[in-house]
Image (cartoon, rainbow, N blue to C red; front, side, top):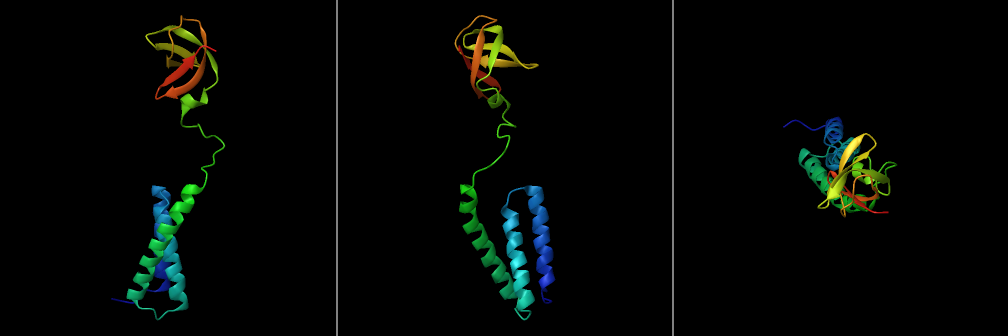
Length: 144
């Protein structure tokens, strides 16, 4: 087997970085960081055998994955629009008017231009109710 040069590791790091952008998992990012560090080690120690390089990569990859995972889980997931993909939760607290009566716990109401299924205590059509939550594609409502 030919010698593995430092730049080979940097190409591997770039490939892992690209793969992580596609997968969006964070897993491949740390493998890329490990490959980048091994490339730096080989740059400083060019006589390091390929077995030593692979061992260093494996060790760094395990260390990066094991020690960064708990740290990343503790970070708060910040978003300026936390309910962007949970449309029903966007309406919590909003007052809406029932389009059709709630019978046996289910009815319909318009929110904006969308007709939603609503769940709550039986109410006649035209009653104003408050959205208290969502359950899948249904809004949970109660009398204000």
